[in-house]
Amino acid sequence: MATWAELERAEEALAAFGRERFASRITYQATLMRDGSPRLHPVSPWFAAGLLCVSFRETSPKVAEVARDGRYAMHSSQPPDDHDGLHGEFMVRGWMEQISPVHPAVNARPSEPDFALVHYACSVEEAVQTTYPGGGPPVYRRWRA
Image (tube, rainbow, N blue to C red; front, side, top):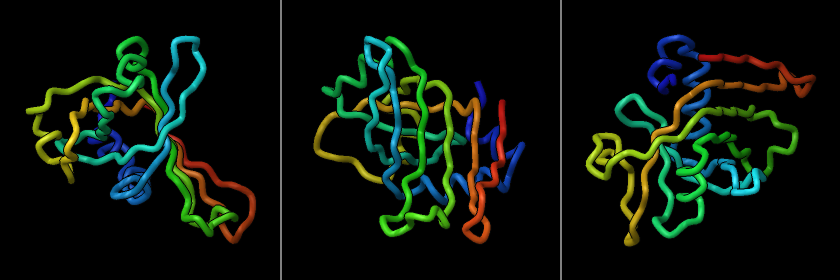
């Protein structure tokens, strides 16, 4: 499984586009419920130690979902007034793997809430940039591990 650092080495401009849309923002991540249905939820990803990372509350049902099936997809959110998509979109998918609370990436987490969290590194199996030059048809740039 590829890491964020591997995406950066392979496709620097694509990774920079994705980092700009994920860093310090709320994004939407889908995991799989027991019946195979997707569960979509907001997350605050961060980048550290060459990894794309997220955390869930320790009591979240998503913790059990990821333990059962670690596949995920994450999509950048648009600014609220960007109905035409002029900001561009970024999507990544792969596998989530739980990491220890003492992992260097967790130590670099931007904030620490007052409740217990479970932390994950997200592999990057595919990354897709979508832009709409001049408001026209979408233009895609894709990378696969």
